[in-house]
Length: 123
Image (tube, rainbow, N blue to C red; front, top):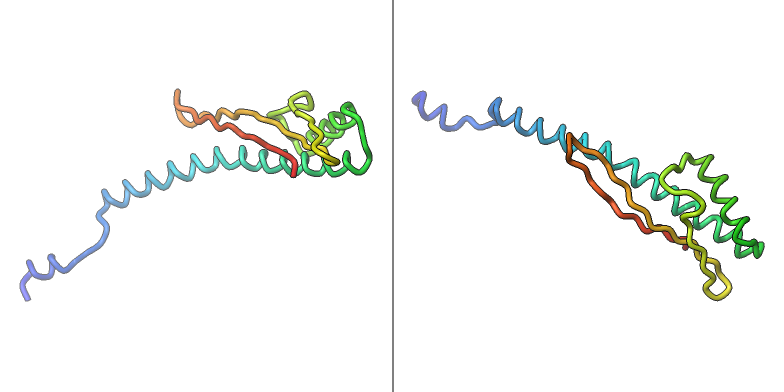
């Protein structure tokens, strides 16, 4: 077997290919670490809206009690993106439905940012 045949059979990743894929993976990881907290906060908001809607339906509470309950829960769960005044309260049949729409702007790098629109609603 000649040297040429041995070189032709060798396969693998070159150093430049390894560096390129490493850079891509690092960028994806950094982006993910910046985006995940927005989705965690969204799920917390949705969970709180659902819990408050269940409480309100059982107790027939008024609007001020609903907003006060959300403010207390937001303080405990460190929800900073919306406040109690941002919640829309509707009655559908015997159930109370709480809704909110908000936008989160996430800076990625330099003047590049990502804007995500969320629509949370109680179940």
